[in-house]
Length: 170
Image (cartoon, rainbow, N blue to C red; front, side, top):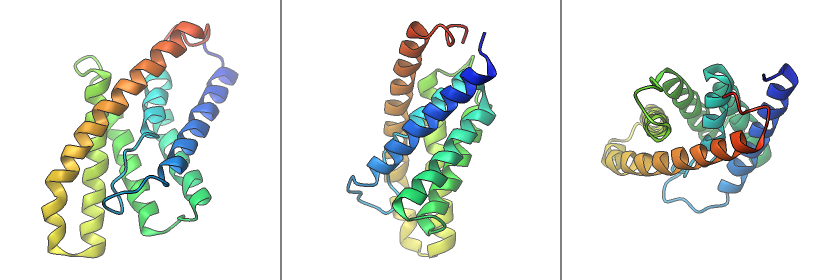
């Protein structure tokens, strides 16, 4: 049985790891301003599968806010791209039927949702027709990163469940 303290501690660890990856990923060169691998979403998925959708969204939003504070990008366009995409991905992954889709499938749907919202926000903010030409590339990248992140999340959850007596029931 998972106690309240176990849930709070586990969520704090998931948020801390997500923030660390969010921050570290800001040092990786990107071909476009809002094109990232999104490794921090691995921990959003872990929270979602361990504790439910609202907790996954809490991890996603906390990661974006704290990570943006660390990188000095709070309330900049990249913050809103990341926050909007993170919330959209969290909601999408929450509502995906887990009995039909694998963890990787749920992750791909979240990644596509994340990127779609970022593209829409970019089109609203930048208002340049050329953005439409990069949509296919961004969606392909989303599928690839969704597969990688879903696979990583499934490995992390498998190991966590094997090694933690508190998480075996999930």
